[in-house]
Length: 319
Ligand SMILES: Nc1ncnc2c1ncn2[C@@H]1O[C@H](COP(=O)(O)OP(=O)(O)OP(=O)(O)O)[C@@H](O)[C@H]1O
Image (cartoon, rainbow, N blue to C red; front, side, top):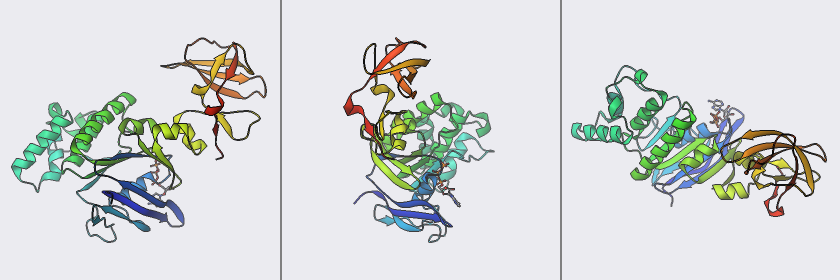
């Protein structure tokens, strides 16, 4: 039996289905990301997993403990399962240290002090412990919210896009730091996001959610090489429709640029990116515009190019 399981969770709001028979089984210490566009049911799922929203049907289990929802439990939620979202609320009038102490008030004073010190160390917050939340940057405030959630050593941490206020550099750094910390603590984690890159920084194990249903799950290599839909394929890169072929697509990185060949086009735009130039190429036959990677940065706007790809790289995607 798995450690944390969401079994056949369905949630309807009035007549609208937000989640449909969602099932997920996690082992202790496992980390998984759920990636889905806005409105796909991610937040609803995490609130149900935390026992904060009542599901229409289905069950949540932590070990042999059934997680009760607010219609079954007087005080909703569990210390063992903590949810962090982007609109975290720190106590504005007390210091960082006191914010972290709040969930620990009923614990023994020695344990409490030790635990606060450990969290301040782990999250690099020592220098800020006397400050009020408004005297911190967004990233630092987010770290305090994380420290607060981790204070009671939850078994399961549910992250609902908690990094979306941060800039890309801060976000990358915090995700990597958090990953190390959570691995060390052996915490079981579900991270929901609309951003696949963020997901893959935390874990290689991904579930793709669309309109409340799981459309695919796997590791990044499987999902990238064998996407089951255009939506999944596009999470990794754009895809070019191959003219005169049904539902067949090729990724910009799977195209080779040649000076001779079959598919002729003209470069109409070029952008310098870190590992390659990203070209827009207008195909002579049909006028389609393809995105093509130029890793040697050889081609310029106006150049004639021939495009080549291996048949095995073609993605056939019906939906
Ligand atoms: N309290 C509510 N009452 C009615 N409908 C709701 C409620 N909460 C969510 N929904 C609907 O359920 C669906 C899923 O919403 P949810 O917030 O779970 O999606 P999400 O994937 O987290 O979206 P986002 O990334 O924009 O936060 C949406 O269509 C939303 O409008």
